[in-house]
Length: 168
Image (cartoon, rainbow, N blue to C red; front, top):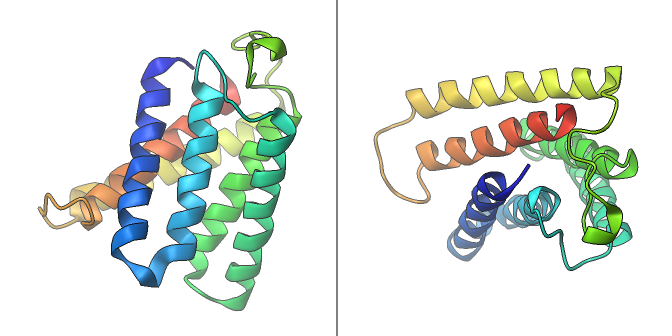
């Protein structure tokens, strides 16, 4: 995916860190978003990540389980359901061998067969990205890092990036 996506995911990760420091009410969700975007940055990076593949797979599995449990408990159900699906999809991308995380993994970008599951998940993320664009356009004009427009913009980046990871 290259440096542009790596930088975008790193920016989302930095935004999550800012939110972690500012809003105690969403700490668990912001922490999960921080880990997700860090993992996605490592997956997109041309140089890979410093953590072995199994570490990222375990992290995505834990985020999936935690987010699914929070969704079942009813805490901000849409947000946690989206997080569970996203983490499961990123774990799937790693397990399916779609994304290298180190030079040892090899350059798989663009050299794999895209499955029906990839297309279904990419379609889901395309819909999420478009819905998030709608939220960006409808949000107040606040330029705050913690404003609804910035948060929705981060959602656009992660959803669009996930779709690209699945089909490229």
